[in-house]
Length: 260
Length: 293
Image (cartoon, rainbow over all chains, first blue to last red; front, side, top):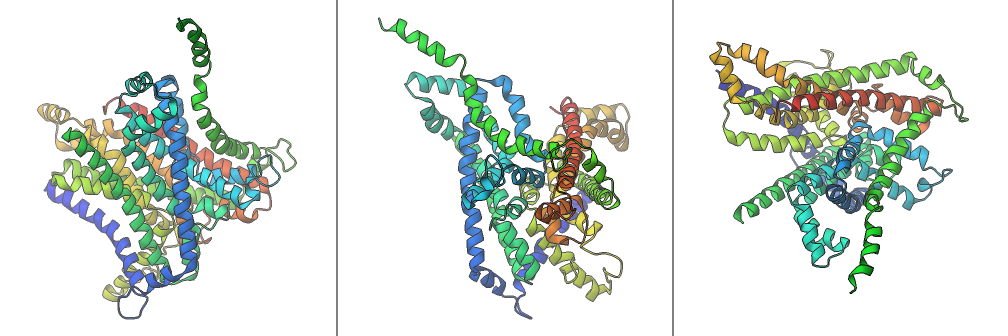
């Protein structure tokens, strides 16, 4: 009886999650009347704006990941090693982007870094791109920090650092060749979440007027019939791939640890 | 021989400069998290010329803005409540319902994907399913003669948005509540039944009170999550539903309210709502962790 109920609940839930995915996929395949075809995908892939916006978002995502890693790994390492009393504060601060809506943060950027301010980032294309990248880094900060911090907790940072120092390593060497390889799995899972967030992000890119994938999706949704659904399928596959890769690297690392 | 001269520089380098290690981080969050937020908060209490005023806050209490906050709060609360309920039932079905163990891992992985699958693509997925020509809409009409539109359902409405938000709310609930359900100790259930409690009594008097802070806390988190969601709403409804994020989006783009500082006040209102929701979440989380360790 209990088991039956559990199955019923689970199946109902799964139905709710599957139907939109089926609907989206079905629509993306029905551009040609009467038969399923990949026409919508072909149309999307032939659209130069797709390549531009997709490429733009991929590059932004990679830059955000590099920036995030360079910012978060040394900070989390330093806090753990030298300033453990600061940890609750830093942890709290990194969670704030989940509390303050992205639209509010970007609103602040626009008013704070406009052409008449002390740091006129939105005045140039490069400056706006930089600002958008920093905004993405802010959005992904909770995930990146949490992943790296969890990774650092599983290793003995103090001993590793002292060992490296006694062998004559400087801080850069310690971070790049001792700490980073040890938390690589954590960094990678943070990186994949960041990638998924940046690829789908709409609000910041739209309000800063940058040609990213998210605003392009919205534009297509307002103007085309079948292409948006093909794009949605592509976006879903990207998200799925990112999460799948996280599972893969985590499992892979558990496996190697168990084998040791 | 060379040892004494080495000592002083080392002491000088180490003592006062430890804080330098967190300087880049402090600079980053200061410039790109705190400063923009403070700009909004301060701007909410300023006239365009820079003087201090409460007019912007007072400006929020007009019918159109108040009703947009009210719709936003209703949608967020409904989707959070339903998300909590369904997510809890699904997690309980998997953890406690005696289902085969292999289901758990794929469900959690899928929840990770679905909770991140928000924004514009999610809106498209639901348009394709419940929109005017959507999969379910068409199927119900052709197979059963049920016309959803005639029944008053519209994807560009309160319920349409709520059902869509559930797609990321339910998975988030599953992700957060599964560890909490794992924390329910078997001994508690056994102790309860030894004392003669029925299953319902165990849930009402033992399990739910223990889980209550976690449940309510997650509710607050889901509420804030839905309240700040912009992209899904814009892609789904355009501007046909006046919720706060959509209004603020239009205001930032083109000052539709006719007063730039009223935009600050709207944004400040959003921070206030999500801030309160999250304070509740954090407070309850600390309380719930006492039991579920």
